[in-house]
Image 1 (cartoon, rainbow, N blue to C red):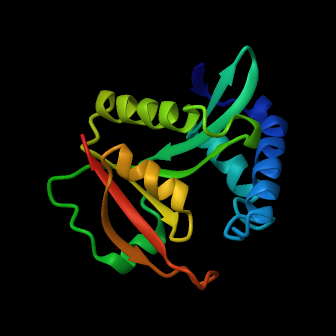
Image 2 (image 1 turned 30 degrees about the horizontal axis):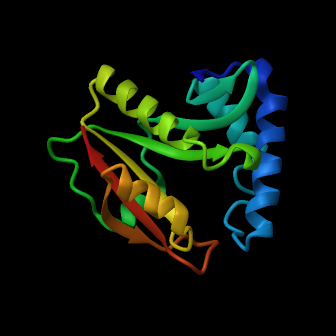
Length: 166
């Protein structure tokens, strides 16, 4: 498995992966990802910013992760202390349904941690849809701790925020 920074030429592959993952999530009753999120415009912006990384095995894209230092606006509801911390934010992550449960998400989190340490970040922060039990279990298994929650304007169910100190 190789995880590398995505290029503009990867856009179609990224959009395909997201479409398959969104369809799978919606079929399981998770509607927080849809045709509006993550949007094509956001993906293009993230590609230009260099914040999307692809997990590939034998040239097959099995997952993606978006990482940068830009704090999501919704986090301001939580009044998190930034004193002494420099967080790297994991904005979204997806693994193709065919390869879920095979350690790819864990590999991408390991990649994020190494990248964060190498670039001088002190922690990783992420949020997950409260109903996503499997993702919550993964966060806890990987030693992330709950630091708060927020209510997005477009969702009835809150998001839970996690942090892992590095």
